[in-house]
Image 1 (cartoon, rainbow, N blue to C red):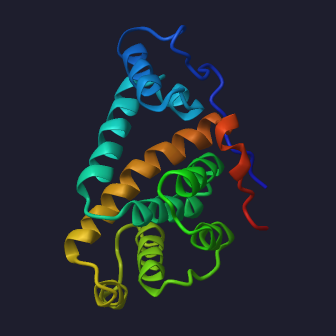
Image 2: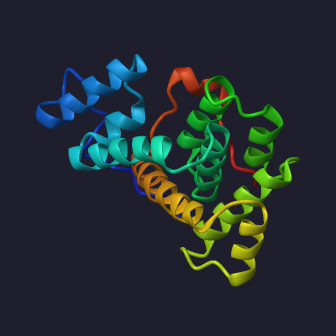
Length: 192
């Protein structure tokens, strides 16, 4: 088994240790969320990454045309496909506490099982296809997605989510970001 590289020279930045743009971004996160997630402390080492993530994440939430349940589903599917333990825990918590995703839906995604709702399953399947096929879905995959009531514009929304989640997933991989205590109830272990 290959050992995954861990960032060695950079640590998780705190508001107190950060300067300039990084400090401003971490301050903004604390004001908005009430705490600074460890992931933000990792990403703040490159302020442009954290700023791009924060801006794009907000744009997806606000403008991509998906319900809060669909948004969490998309983020969970991407994070699972990318094997991001941190984002699986964080988005499972958000799904439970904020987005009101039915637990059976969240747990199905976490476990790699079918989702009981056919429309949500179509969204999960298409999102997974887009990640696994690197944005090259088959005609059949797109037809199934559209047949479930989604649009070609929604395809672009999925691409937006893949971009923003891939940034955070990859940063978490490299930092081996520890799951924040607030998300600890939804720690995820990838099935063997």
